Image (cartoon, rainbow, N blue to C red; front, side, top):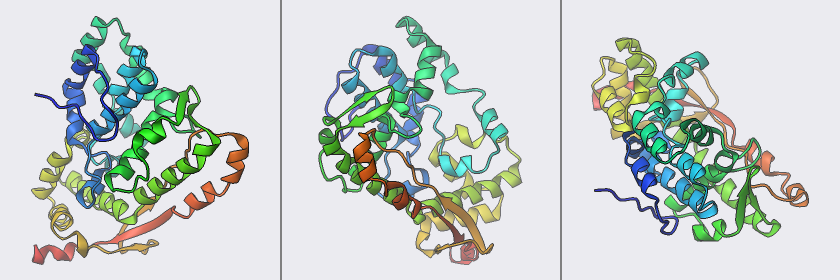
Length: 321
């Protein structure tokens, strides 16, 4: 009983081993983790990392129909995703983050067996899933993951001006990432700018900041290992926080779920609220040099989205909950 449909891209024939990978518990878990974390609580961006993975895989199959290694890597590219990702990542040091992934989902016996039967080296698939420029792009240029992220974001809020197939049919992908013509460059800049403006919304950042603060309070009471929360789903974390031993964590999460309009977000950090910062993504498809010059204000426009804010801490809402 599985449904592998998603709304952006047309039907793509799924190879038998790909269907088995999608059915592994490591990939299925992504169904319960929102791609954009706390944004799913207050916006139409409620799709999961599973739908995002389906999109990445479909794009990979469209551009590289005969590349089994890359197609397998696309399916596994998000399995290290964690619930409320940016909120949880902000809590840990580099060493703690490394500890979180020492028992990586890539070490799954079920995944190894499927790849072994297909004569696909699991180490090579892991390398592709984590680092392939076809999927992840480069430091400057988008890959297929970034393409799905942008198109899916705008589609979900009704702001995508053309059908997804329009953008897909006018670009190509190689080891330097996504490429498009000079004519399409302007359209892609609009898509990426609209995406980053939406995802840099201060309210989205505020939600993650509140969740992060609630987890921090709960963590202080329970003394759990740092990777405990990373192994859960979004809903499991919310349930833990709603019944936390920390009264403050309970207040914050109940207010967030039941009265989000009571939180106030303002620029700057006075120390009287929960601070957070917004950092937009700076990558575009690779375009010709002359076109890049005409879009030299791209970075300047994105720089205006970088801001520090704070959420006014309304734990005093307790008596109204």
